[in-house]
Every structure is written in structure tokens, then in C-alpha cells.
Image (cartoon, rainbow, N blue to C red; front, side, top):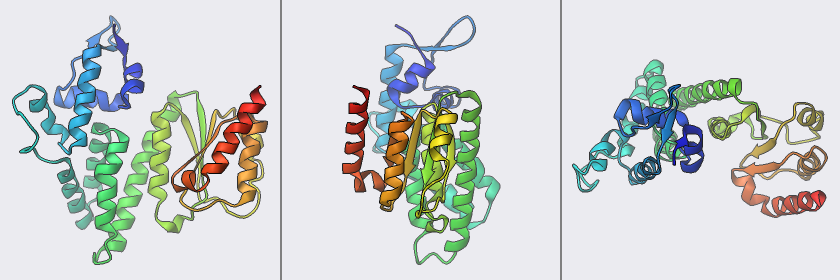
Length: 277
């Protein structure tokens, strides 16, 4: 049985851009082609992709995976670790070289699945840059976050042009909290799920979001996602519940608020389920 690249992405969690990069840059995959040139993958290819992911999870750099797949190296103990990949990024930040930073981020975001990119690159760089002992903390933080946001925004915009499924991403976190790049990473995650994403961030905590229900209904959004780290006021939760019930649009939470409001999420699911009966 053969699978199209979109099916493989859904099965493995690796987006099509990354699958193409693994093939073109590193020769890790050799999919078959249709007469029109579309890639087709076998079950063996899917198992290989999962094996590649397992090596990456162990910290092996993508550039060092091929010898492992071909059995030229028996284990990863002597391999370059993927965490070493942040050294060039830190160097570019130290030298304030934006173009180099853009190049490095563009490459890494193509070569690694987004959750792994966040774990292996974003979190370690954040830790280094935000170290109170870092004398260049303010400059590096601004450069790092703005460059990463621009990369995410560019990729989100590309997906928006070719996807008909619409999702709205809301955030009530103040811009000065320094987590805006994680909000944009969440937008990119939704894009990778096949959504055309409309991001509304830095929204006010107090009061009603006038026009929210109308916007969701008129623009036929299929999903509303709220991301954040701070507890949401009851007024906002009530409005989100109305969006779910009146607009028949699923509402979900990401970030710490998913745990903070876990009971509310369960109640919302129950109410929507009863409403469909």
C-alpha cells in the first residue's frame, strides 16, 4: 500500500516540508513518484521516518542520522548531539548577525518537526539568552524573539494561502511578558495541522470581546484555540463557551491554561456533546 505525503504527515507528525528536506538534503528517504511527480511512501518508509524520529529524540543531529540508518554506526554514543546545533545560533546572537540567525532558523525549522525544534532549540536558547548573568540579555532577547516570530509568521502566511480550513488563535498574555514567540509557535503548530490561522494576541483580560461570536460565525472558523499561561477571567470563559455552543465551533485551550481550566474544558465538552444529541 502506498501513502501520499499528506497522509504520511498525519500518521507520523512530520510535516511535508520536513519530509522533503530529509529527502533532498540528506537522502534519508526515497519515495516513489506518480506520473505527475507526487511522492508516494510505503509502510517501510513510514517505519523509517519513525526510526529517524527516535534518533532525533535521543539527541542525534539530523546530519548524522544516515550512517545509523545504513548500519555504518552501531549506536549514537559517538554522534554529534542535536543540542550542539544551538551553538551557531548563540554565536549569531552574540555577534548581532540577524541574517545568519534567519538562515539557521530557516534550516532548522525545515529539518526538525516543530515539537522537537521547540524542545531542542527554542527552550535551550531561551535559557541561555535569559540568564541573568548574560550581559547582552536585553539585546539578544529582542533579536532572538523578533527573528523567530518573523520566521513563524512567514510560514503561517504561506499555509494561509493554500488552506481552506480556518482556525482562530487567541492570546490574552501581555506583550511585555516575553512569550510572544511561543504564541507564534502555537500558530505555526496549527498551520502544520492544516489550518489557515488568524492570530489575535495581546487581547485585554477585562470585559467582553465584542464581535467575537459574529467573526467566528461569519468567517466559518472551524476551531478557536486560546493559548496562555495565566488564569482567564470568568467573563472570558463564558464568552468562549457561547462561541462553542452558539457557533458550533470547537474551543480548546493550550499552554498552562489548559491545566488551570481543566474542569471548565471537561464541562464544555459535556455541554457540546449534550447539545448534539
